[in-house]
Amino acid sequence: MILNISAVLLFGAASALAVKTKSAGGGAALVLFLFGFFAAGTGAYEPIHNLVQASADAIAELGN
Image 1 (cartoon, rainbow, N blue to C red):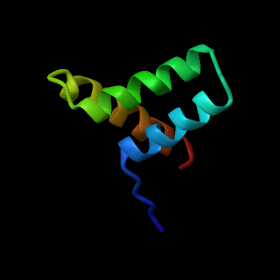
Image 2: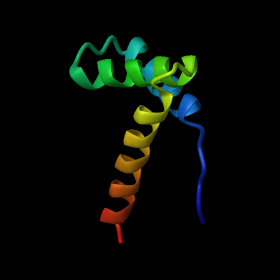
Image 3: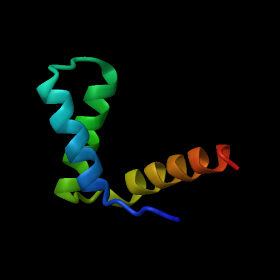
Image 4: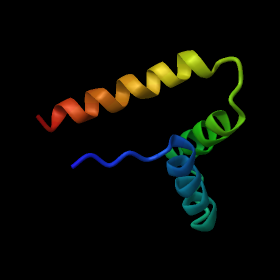
């Protein structure tokens, strides 16, 4: 079974959790950056989207 979740929804939930727990680390900064990026849909969308997609594909391949 494949579960498909929107990146905006995923990073939005992670951002809300980071703000609620008052996380101030590098991971929280990355999550907040990615949420803002995906929500805004700027001109840099394509290269960053490709990087995130490649990372997700690499993590998925580790399980196989």
